[in-house]
Length: 305
Image 1 (cartoon, rainbow, N blue to C red):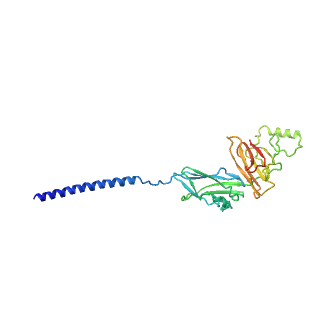
Image 2 (tube, rainbow, N blue to C red):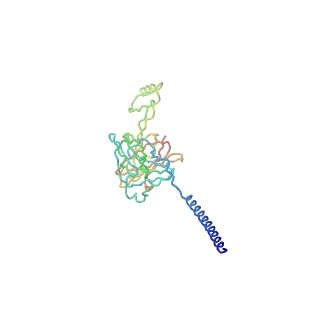
Image 3 (cartoon, rainbow, N blue to C red):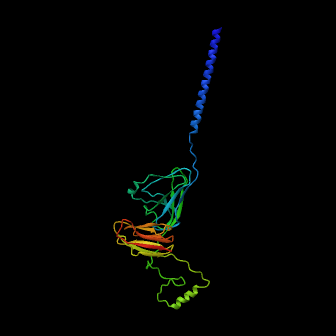
């Protein structure tokens, strides 16, 4: 009888120890699973948008065109770099239909570029079409479209490209205006006629608004400009013409002479594109000269009022 009771007690003790052991193991396993689950990071859904912007609504033919892609999402976006193809899809409206345009950059310049451009959350990336000069070489209404990987929304911007106005005969010295603000094409006009125009212009007639002018300067293969002092107004058009052409291109740089003066994009001319124009959109003073590797040329001052 004593042996039977002893065996019963041993079995009861074994079951108790086993139950406690199983319980401890279950607690430990549960704690480990909870900790592992708490360390798992779930992906958040993208919230935000993509913005494509260009600085102006109108450009001259061959005027530099830049763009900015802004990532307003809370995660990075990725843009495929298709160089030597154009960086954005470009369309021109022809008879009411959007026609896709293509141009090819020098493949040599593409080898050093990343094939995938990453735009961080709330970041942006800038670009331009300087390596694709044939995209906007005709007047018309254009649309540029940004394609972003894994996003179905297509951000786009539209703008106009207009022809360069023909240069004046006296390109560096527009015709003088009379007191009434009218252009006098007759240097021999009498003072009485001028006085009558001035009298007519006074009174209730409003003062005439300024009409933008078109100026032209030339540069040769050695970086020499035919004038070194330009005084223009906001809205005027400046055309740089390449004379005595050589095998190389000439790049005209504009250096602001004051920290508060905005920058002006450089203008490049060569034996194929012998003239390029820019619209002067801001007041200020700049020093213009050929690219730094040309040391034989001169330089000039551009003042815009």
